[in-house]
Amino acid sequence: MASQPLQRARFEPQQWSTTARTHSPLSTPDSSWTTLISCAADFPIELFEIALSQLIHHPEYNSTLILRSDVIAEITSHFPEKVPTLEGFQPVRCIHRKLQARRPGRDASLEQYCTLYSPTDSELQVPTVLVLTPIVPPGSTLPYYHPAISHLAFRYLSSSPPTLLIEALPLPNTPTDPNSRLYRTCLALLETLHRYGWGAMTNYKKRVQHDCLVPRDAYQDLYLLMRERHKGLVDTWQEVTDPLKHVFEDIGIATYLMLLWKDTFAIPDSPEGEPNAEEPWKSWPRPPGGFLDLGCGNGLLTHILTAEGYAGSGIDLRARTSWDHYPLATQANLHVHAFDPTLPISSSSPKSTASAVDAPAPPTTTATGIKELAAPDPYFKPGVFLIGNHADELTPWVPVLATLHNASGYISIPCCAWSFDAKFERSSTPSFPIPSPPLTTKPVPSSHKLSTSASKAAAAAFAETLNLGGDGSNTSSYSQYRIWLASLSLHCGWQIECETLRIPSTRNWAIVGELADITLDEAMDNVRGIVESVKERGIFKTRKPEGKAGEH
Image: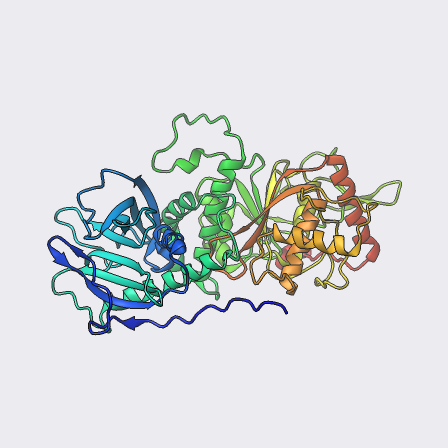
C-alpha cells in the first residue's frame, strides 16, 4: 500500500501562559526575558538551524519595508560585547548582518547580530536559540520596521511535544499584549519559522529561482537608483493604463538589462576616460549594435534606456500618446515601423537612412521566385540586442529574427501565446526537438528517434531546467507555450537561460538568448526551414503601420 504524503501541521499559535509553562524564560545576569508566543514544533531539532538560516538571510519575506539582508561577517569566537550572555547557553556562531531598507530615503538601514546558542551541557553544540540584537548607534533610534526590543529570541524546546517560542527584552514601556505591534510582529515571525521548519523537513524546493544571471544585490541597488531617477513618470503618465504597474515594471526590466549587458559584453573603447562615479553605468559594456524593442508600445522602456545613455530604438505599428511627451532624444528613437520576417535579407544592398516613419522596403523577386528585400531593415543592425517584452504575435519571431540578423542576444518576456501565424495550440502547433538526457542545449537530431518513455523523460527533464514555476506538473497552456518557446530558441541556435524577473507582473518569466550553441550554418538552415514552412501555409500576413505610415 502506497504511503500517504506528509501533511503539514496546522499553525496554532498560543499566547504563552505563565501558569502552564514548563520551562523558565531566557535570562541574562541582569534581566529576565518575556515569553510572548509559542506553537508546536513539527520538525526535529536538527532542522532548527536550517529554518533559522532562512530567517536570517531573508528578512524581506516578513517585511515589505526591508529590501534584503547583507552579511557583514560571521563570528565563531571572541563574540562582540553586545551579544548577550544567556544563563545555561553558550554562543556558537554569530552572523553580523545589515538590514537594507527598501526605501532608504524614508527608513534607515540597521545592523544586527544574529547569534546562535546551544545548551552548555550539550556536547553536540546543536543550536536551540537564536537571538537578534539590533546595533543602534548613539543618538539614533530603531527604524519603524524593527520591533521595539533590545533582544529578540527564537527558541526550540525539546519538550513533549516539541515547542517553538519567541522571547524578548522589550524596550521600556513597550506593550506586549496580543493587540500590540510587538506581539503581532512576533506572531508573523513565528508562523514563518514554523513554515521554514516544515520546508526543511520535506526538502521544500522553491517554485522559481530568481537572480540566475544578474546578482540580486546588484539588481536591487541599481533598481533603487533607477526608481528615484524615473519615479516622476508616474505623475506625468499619458496613457489610460495603470502608471504604477507600467512605470515600475519597465524600470525593473531596464535595470535588469543594464546589468545583463554589463556582464555579457566586452568593455568598449571609451574616449571619456574615467567612469562617472555618480553614473557608472554610462561607461558599462553594452550591445555592439544597440537595442531594438520590438512592439515597444508606450515606449517607456526605450525612454528609460535612452535616458541612461544606451543607444537603440523602439518600433511599433502605431505611435502612442506618450511618444510626443518624451524628451526629443527619446522621440528620435521611437518609430512607427512594420517589417515582414518572412522576407530574406539582402546583405549586399546598401544600408538606408531611417526616418521617423518607415514602411517595409519594396520586395524584388529573384530567379528562383523567392522574394528578397531591396535593402536591409534599418533597425536590425548587426550585433543588435532584441527585446520582446510582451510582444504577442512577434514573440515566436524573436529568436528567429535574432539568428537572421546576427543579433548579439535577446530577451523575450512572453505574455499571450502565439505561434508564427496563429494562436498557440499545444495539440496542433508544430514542435521542435528538445535535448535528450544527459541535458545539453543541443537538440537531438530528428533522425534519432526516442522511445515514448524516453521522449517523455527527456521532455520532463528539459522542462525542469526552464524555471517555469507552478506546481511542477507543467501541464498548463502557458507552461507548454514556454517550453515550446525554449525549444524553438535552441532550434534557432541560441544558448538560453530562463529567469524569473523581479518585476510587478504575473508574466515575469523571461528567456535570455546568449551565444549561439550550434554552427551558424546549421542555425540558419533551421531558421530558413521555419520561414519556408510559414510561407507554405500561407496564413501569415504582415500587419501594416497605422495612421499616416500605413498610407505609404
